[in-house]
Image 1 (cartoon, rainbow, N blue to C red):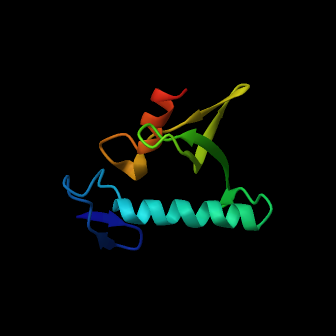
Image 2 (tube, rainbow, N blue to C red; image 1 turned 45 degrees about the vertical axis):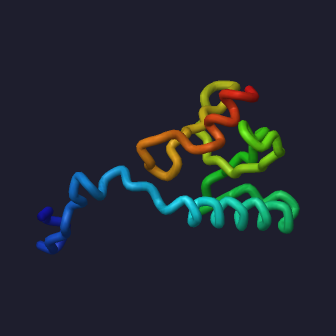
Length: 102
């Protein structure tokens, strides 16, 4: 247990819960909806007041073009993309797509 303001006790996440990613179907649905809203809005590129970049990648197995919304970190004249898959212990599919087709 952890004490947080006004003497309230909150439960800390267990080691099993830390780093657990959302289900794959949820990530795919969220990505699809986000890209759709981006296109319908004429280019809205924010989520929770955070700018997003939309990256077009070629599928490593399908060879089909895919658009994915990614949060980024400015790094000088470049940007850093974090391949976290929502905190999963393995890389997201887009990472492997970029490795195969940089």
